[in-house]
Image 1 (cartoon, rainbow, N blue to C red):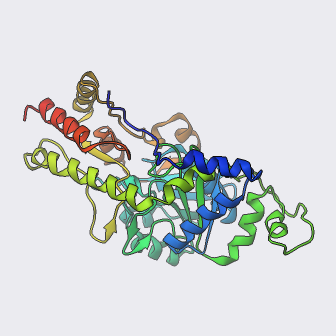
Image 2 (cartoon, one colour):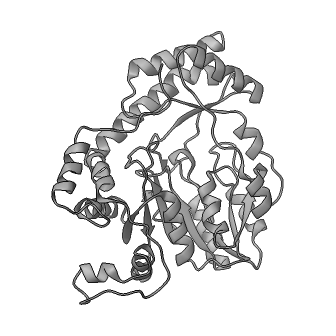
Image 3 (tube, helix red, strand yellow):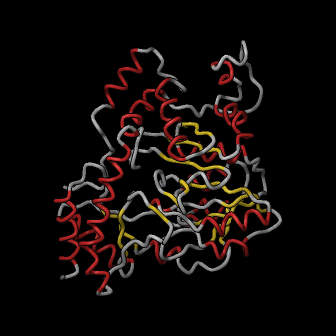
Length: 376
């Protein structure tokens, strides 16, 4: 069986975890947490990176820093993971779902402005599959209306838009290091902060509302409770696991891109004949091969394809159920405009196995079975 995902593992993870244990510093903000923060800052250009316990918590921190309040409206796509909406629903805000582009599955930037009201607080672009949204347009709209931009770049580490790292273009960005991501710490994420004025407040919120970070830097002689907050710090053992992959980030990224390109080349004949559709990478976007998906004709065909692949030892999956159709989405949010593509495209999309240890031979077997299904 070729499984859908295997968490990345380079070989040094247990060694670094042992180092963290031996140093008797396994709680948050230890040596490996700092290494990971520094690596992300150096490789993205963000003013500040704070490792968190999840991407969900990173977005929650961004919502707090943006001072999202009950009744505020947050524009976002419906085709995304629940965390994108949850972080704002917890603040009493209303997710306003806007349709997606059928080419990239990203928020349709041309529909955002019509969804803006006097209650709109922020725009949350989601960079699906590590492919950038049209950020110039989004930032221009945000600037004209005085809105915050919070990038859900859960899948976007090492991807860029016009040379800028995803997660660094808006006011705040969020990465995920879940076991399904390009680099993993099991459960984990990171908050990226563009403006230095938010850094101290972010540290306080992340440290249970205390100024403990300043204490550890020797800036104060004792720390105390100064604001509301929560515990968003991951264990340094988790960060140690992640560090083993960040050390080899380019090796991992290059291999994933090789596999992605192989998928594309071997399945391109099916696209040329109009049998299925392959991912679209817009000009000026550099992606990170987070996933490889194909689009079948419709839901019925996709279901048959998934079953055929499973019967042939390949675990392939569909992805998000649009949030505006879910019970919580109906309860907490609303869809602005017409759902022309969100549901239709989500029902066609099929994700093929993609992970660091996947081999070229396995990719060829998978593409061969896809061709067999379509009698090619």
